[in-house]
Image (cartoon, rainbow, N blue to C red; front, side, top):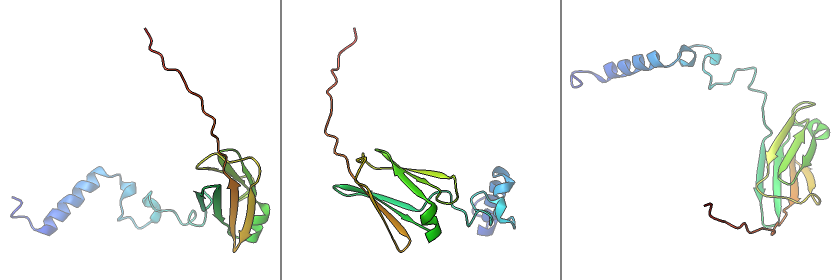
Length: 141
């Protein structure tokens, strides 16, 4: 039977089967962009949900580079950090808060921040925590 079918017939059959099992809102043949949940609507294209941040570590420091959109954004935003997280407030709008998990533990003091060409670079010294405790493993009877 498959030898008698043409490639166009096979393609048509496969498309019909896919249409039966995929909800209509996911159908790519719809004219509107909102029909496909994987395409962003035009209202959401200009709005981001997370800051554009790169986090990396060297031997002694953790660096966070964040692309800013304007100098006004730089003036209104606030940056905090804990021993394992960076917190950015007022990045997109007043009152929003974003958390970035750091790749290792960092010290509480000694962080520096610089802005150049609308890129914020935060340098935080790493905390070398060499303390460890041995745990005795016993067998339960």
